[in-house]
Length: 401
Ligand SMILES: Cc1ncc(COP(=O)(O)O)c(C=O)c1O
Image (cartoon, rainbow, N blue to C red; front, side, top):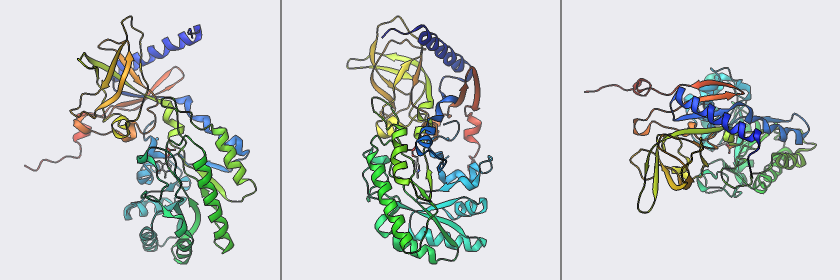
């Protein structure tokens, strides 16, 4: 389809902004669009009320890209976040983290084991507090996603088996420094099919009703996150349809519904900008060696995840098929295989849909500083995180000899 004048103008503008950004901030750069995160309003509209509360999952993106819940009390509360809107999930909560969360006054601990329950009761007692608790139940539903991001099957480490939950709730209700407030469930990430989410919701609701029948009344039901986004050719769930799935189940109920979206809020709002250092033709394949690497965007190396890769500028050179690889000494250091691109050395490439689990998974592997991040809001570019320097990276190190 020919590009419309508006489409063309937009393309030129985007290329210009990205070139300018790369010149100002160096090429390995996380770029986020400010306007791309509001579509979850659709779920709220479908629910036709304000009962849905969004707890943005911080794991997906800590800077502009949103910290892991493990760090969230340490990170969010000092940053001005509202502790009463924080739920704390995770199978390995430490004593220090529990203390910090109790002192901050978070909404709820999503408890994932009996040992954790007893530890939380002890820590709360030492502080003279009562900890609000939910159990994160594992409903044993197949979320039909990549095995590394499936969390709701019984072989996964997450949550307590749903069949054990009634006995655990009775135990929690008997412990003096705990107050049972809710229930939680998160079955996985990058879900394309809504039916596992609906199945999980049905199992959780049946449990909530059974608990109420024996006098354990819950105030909130947290159904986690997990809605997928398009990386390649997936058809991600329509958010309004997800809203309808929830509305059908929650109509007439008194519990507050909480959701924890991560990827679907920010995934498509970000891209990773990188520059082609070398084009290296080979007998079997051609390589485009770029200045970004697996430390900047780990998803391809970790899950063989696909990210669309586009050339920022149009070139009048023949298109060729390239493997797009980073400079690190690992064959797993690739960003994409067999991409047809008309490019020259020095060109900028954009790796799309890098707004979630991009920067939040980035590391200093190979002594590489993490990229800067910018936010584009209409015509303005804001630097939201500086590129790391050698000084940043060495700050905590000590010489022994
Ligand atoms: C407990 C919990 N809730 C919510 C999320 C967010 O999931 P997503 O980014 O798929 O929406 C995660 C992701 O790991 C999670 O572990």
